[in-house]
Length: 465
Image (cartoon, rainbow, N blue to C red; front, top):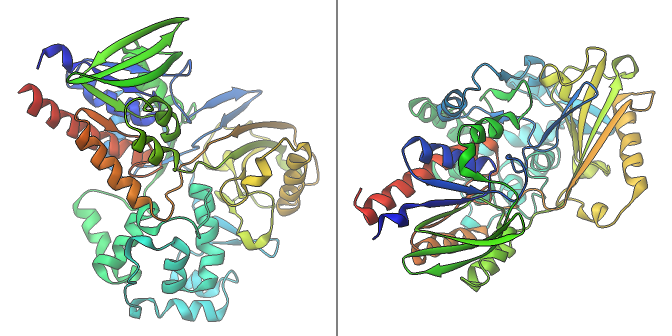
C-alpha cells in the first residue's frame, strides 16, 4: 500500500478518542481528529461560575490501572490531579425517607438497619449457590436475586446501577454491563470466593478493584484532562467539524465533512470512530446498513443533571459522605445526589455546600419526554426533605443529556460480536467509545491503549512497519 494510507482519522475528541490519539501521536503516527463541538471533552464538560465548579458529565474517575496516572503525567496534569476526601468513602442509601450508610465491613453489615436479619442471613448462603445455565442472557436483577436475594437487589444493586448507568437492572446484561461480576461466578463459582481470589490476581497485574481504587479529579474539574490532551496536539484537531458520511474507497475510507461552510473530504487507510453509536449509525448509512441497525439499537436514556448550591448553615444533614442513591422502591423523582463540595476541594466557597442531582435515566425516562417546569421544583423539594434543608438554593444550573449513557442491555453480546465481525469485514476501521468495553472514564482510558495496540499491529501487518 501507498504510505499515504497511513494517515489516521479519529472521529470524536472525547476521552476515548483523545487518549487513543495520545498514544498514536506519541509513537509517531500521523493523526487528525475530527470533533463536532468547538471544544474537546465530549460528555466531560466543566464550567466555573459564581464561585462554583460544575461538572455536567463525569464528576470523577477511579484510578484502577497505572495507565491512568501515566496519561495524566504525560500531558502535564500531575500537579492538578486531586484525590477524593476520605469523608467521601461513606455512601448512603435512602430507605423509608432516611439515609443509611452502606456498610463497608462485616461488623457494619450485621449492624446496619438497611437490610433485615433475613437478608443478612441469606447472604451467608452465597458461596453454596451454583452457576446459572442462562450464561450471557442473565439480567443483573436475575443474577443478584439468585445469588444474594431480593432485598440486596432492591437496596444495594438497584440504586448502584442507577448511580453508574442511570440504568434499570431488569434490563441490563450482567455479562456485558458488569463483566467482572459475571467472571467471579464463571471462574470461581461465586462472588465471595471470587473476590478473595481475584484480589490476589489484581495485585499481580498492578490493578485496583473499583471498590478500592482511589477516586480522582482535577483542580479545575474533569474536563481538564481532555483539554490537556488536546492542547498537546492542538494542530491535529479539527473543531466544529461536521462529518457527513463515510464511504469505502479502495484500500481505505473517504470521510466527507463540512467545516466553516465548506464541504471537504479526506482519505485514510485507518479510521477510528470514538463517537456515540447513534452518531456513527448516521455516518455509516452508505457503508453498511447492518452495522447501522446494531448501532441504533443501543439505548441511550435521557438524564438531567441538576446542580444546586445551599448555604451550609441551612443544611441539617451531616455532610460526611459521597452522597446518596435512591432505590426504585422509594418512589422518588430523581436517582440520587452527589455531595460535590464534600468530595473535592474548591467546588464551592467555604460557607456553601454544592450538590449534583440526577433525574430520569432508564428507570424513568418519561419524566424527561417533554418540558415539565414543575419537575425540577418537585425534585428540589424531595432533596430538601431528605437533606433537612430549610431554605431555597442560592445557585442552580441544569443540563439535559438527551442521550446520556449507553445501556448494555440483555443480548448486548450480539452487538459485541457483530462489531468484532464488522472490523474484520472492514479492515482498518476501528470502533471505540464507551459502548464498547465499559462506560467509566477509567474503562475508556484503559481501552484506548487496547485500541492503540490493535492499530499498531494492523499498521505493522499492512504497511510492513
